[in-house]
Amino acid sequence: MKAMILAAGLGTRMRPLTDHMPKPLLSVGGKPLIVWHLEKLKQCGFTDIVINIAWLGGMIPEALGDGEQFGLSIRYSDERDETALETGGGIFKALPLLGDEPFLVVNGDIWCDYEFSSVSPIALQDLAHLVLVDNPAHNLKGDFRLDSASRVHSEGEGKLTFSGLSYLHPALFEGIKKGAQPLAPILRRAMYSGQVSGEYHTGEWQDIGTPERLSQLDSELLQRTN
Image 1 (tube, helix red, strand yellow):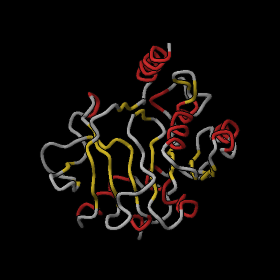
Image 2 (tube, helix red, strand yellow):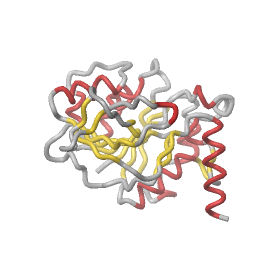
Image 3 (cartoon, rainbow, N blue to C red):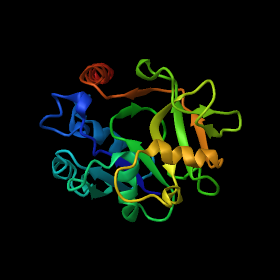
Image 4 (cartoon, rainbow, N blue to C red):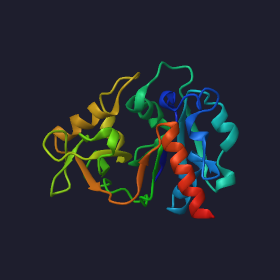
């Protein structure tokens, strides 16, 4: 099973740190944030990784290469000549590199202790499987509702936050046109037809979207290693 790390964002909320460096290369706990993801993916049995790049994107292949140093094979979906594709459009562009089987998607700006599975939970039935977490202070209304049968819905009370971790089937993107596409409407379309499952992750999870959150995580990780 392949995995895709989303690393093409402008990092606007992380400025000025991202004025001269793409967000995934910002250091936390002594190493770039994206390297933590790569090491975790390797540990969980993944070997083939796709990374999309855009803003200052040339710096990411320069730092990571073809993945050999991590025991991985890394390929890049280059969006530098495109108008910002957003998450859905970026994944759609990368589909030729991801193949015909379900794949894991990891947001490049999160931190979590979720154990990635190299065996897709949607291999047999659904178009998507989402990992949901408790709502952080910056998203108290949540995103999606998880019912007792592990089905995900876009409406209803008790919504949780989409963690940025998902298992997606290429068929989820059937009928999608090339260009900018948010992921949420694509997921909602699949939810309406009952083809999205999910799970509730109660462990550690953080959205590292601002300099303050990056600094806080950096301090926490350094304390753990000292």
